[in-house]
Image 1 (cartoon, rainbow, N blue to C red):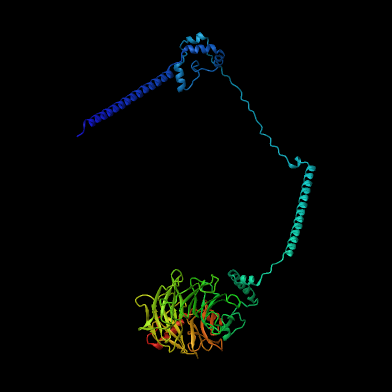
Image 2: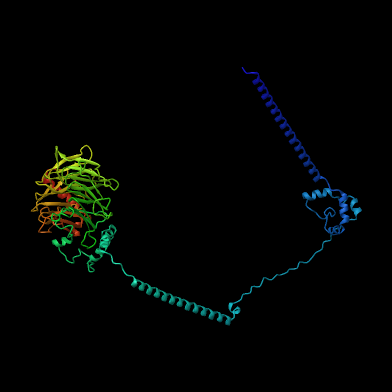
Length: 623
């Protein structure tokens, strides 16, 4: 329960609130009464104003005004008044209605007018004649310049202007002469100062230090390439731009396959064997060649890769790269043309950069069990621009998939085995646009169809036919009216080249024209029926199976002293690059009429394959 003090407090609080409400109510009531009073005052003022407007003017005011302004009344009396003159009819208007009500009528007596003496007179109207007045327009006067200008003054102005121009021309010439004199004096002074300057002779140590600096070497290499290109270039102004450029007709060997040039270097290629050749897709004038070690130069790097330029006639390579292990295979990075990739005899994968300005690798794979530890003879970049990998296979049958950004560890590995037996891979080939399925050749002479991914990852099918190690393997990559990607050819040390179909385990045909080991074979990239092969006797054979399967269309002895061990077509199919065991790379021009296929070549090849198929099996080949 609350105490007595709390009760008193509540009562005082209630009394205070009641008083506040009452005061507030009194204030509101007083304000309302004040507003009502003010409203009544405003209404009263409005009524008074309206009464003043409707109240008539007093007559006494009129009388006083009339008496004081007699002159004004006399003047106004001449104006007709419709109230006095019944002949003047004035249309009724709101103004004159009020005036008639207030003014006296004619029949009424006007005491005020009599008292003031004001009379209204009726004006008399009379006829007048109208006079026509013609106002002439303003006269337009024109003046000629001749009439306004004095001839003597004009002549004087012309002479003054000529004199002024003559003086300006003389001043300009004088300034130019002064400037030439000053320039001559400055040049003479500079020549004297240069003669007086004594050039400081550098010591031998300073010269060696400058020549050993990285900046000087980079500048010298870059400048030397440019100067060498300019000095080595020979232009034949009489070159005939018609036919095949020889000026003669015929189909002999020299016309079908003509030597263009030979790439070799006294230091870097002598006594080295060419191991692989590759073309740059973005820059077709660049040719990559890898070399084995030079046994006669133990102090030189064992592995060498040179990039030659076909566009210029210079004899030195465009780029020089090397490493400490023989390079067994090399290629350009297909989607990064500045990168050069190599597979070495020790099993390392190395990468060089043509932009780096250094000859040693910028990346290399580790020598560990996670990567290769055997020679890498197979190297190829597969995929698309946004998703591609480097595929490498060593002789121990291990396949590694690499990212070009990181060679420290392979992204994926696969062991190629046939019935628990390791396959010693010597060569590899992917079909055009293929990234999963591929073909490999082995040391025992068997070819295998394999896959990188899926349930059948590894070796899927074997193709037996060779009796020696497989040295070359290539899939048909020609694009045209038909699809012949299922065709591939292989070469071997059994002196044969064999034509295969992925749908059959036996070869379609065997080309037995060679008299020694056949080291490499390649399809033409544009003609579906043309391929080339090189052998240990230094001879190159070019075949067209649509024309003849017994004898090659071209057979040329390139080198009689050493073997030819690799070859590569240009991207347009009109050039052949051939490497030998002495470190020389030959560039041959292939005649255009044989290199470029006709439209009927695809149908003829289909017919030829059907004939070959009939000799192998009773079922015709389906294309």
